[in-house]
Length: 378
Image (tube, rainbow, N blue to C red; front, top):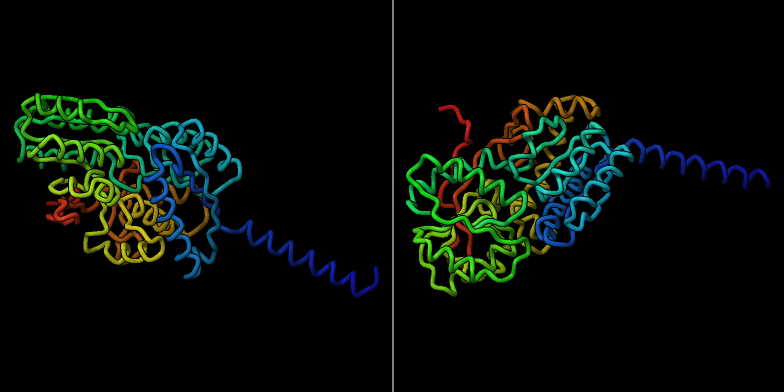
């Protein structure tokens, strides 16, 4: 090899090594979400929100001068697959994990992120997620322990006899149990508890059971596609009483799938792009993905900015220090605009912030009331 070609080879090796070093110094994130199966709607929205935030952060200089690099994997809405993918991410020494969104999956997979001392941001809402003392799991939305006291207050004012239709998985059973406990010594009596399956298509029997119970209102706690089918069946059978939900019932995907049958549905939501604080995000998300973001898109997006806030508070790229910096801390949207709303984390990874009561009117989600944080000082 002559001198010229030798120098070219050396230069190419140096460039390759520099590139590999730069990649090694990236803040590596694993996006482990439901892109197929029953959770595909939720997981895809969450994934898009995560990726949108990463692009913005990288374009503005990264975090502590470091870029974020990421991989995206499909759990297939299967807890066992989610656990295996999380184990793989931990073995690859990622800095943080996003997902899964489904409660049943994160409940299985988060043991792996704990083993790796890796901050794990989830969209799952089951109360059990943060009740196990895992110091590395953080919610990107309300857990049932924060959300359900708010919706229970609303139900007390609207219903004396309530029918509950819920999906028979960790998410649905957790919500049904939380609501039952909150209403146990209240003016509202639960007169029917109707279990349905994940992915259920026919809700005719469930609606008949609710009608026969003598209920004066219905509380629905099912996934997006199921909620839309339930609303259509309620309309078909002439249900004309309040239809109340938590988070999902008035979400963008449900309104899109249920059409006119969604009108009149009311839900407490932690996040909606129809709220003034989130409208700008909603417009940018729609421009990028040509679809309206539901709460899962906001969860993914704000989750990445919460990691950024935690790293900047810790002042170093240390997973353990970042997890500690997020616990028992409050972050303001003024200081960290990407989190969109002021938020506080407790010692378990549960968050608290303002939320909204929404109603579907003429096919549109309307914010009818803003509720203060559950633990707001009076």
